[in-house]
Length: 69
Figure 1 (tube, one colour):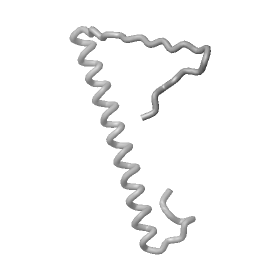
Figure 2: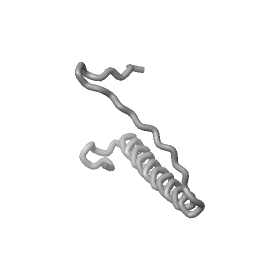
Figure 3: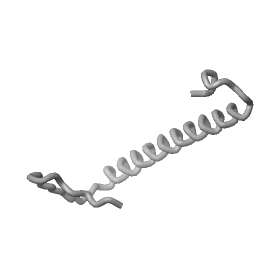
Figure 4: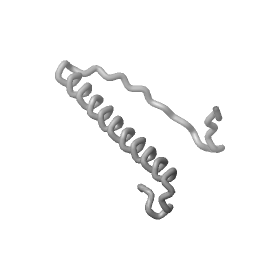
């Protein structure tokens, strides 16, 4: 893996934050994380299904212009 090196004359600064949510805030954070994961899984499934459909269409001899996008 390449190591990051800033350009000469530039300075890199980082911050680290700790979360300390209350009970209701923790519930909301978990809900948002679950929704993000569900959206990711849906998108991954859609892309995978489209890719597999396109591969199958190629084996049927369908023209390039008519393949699934």
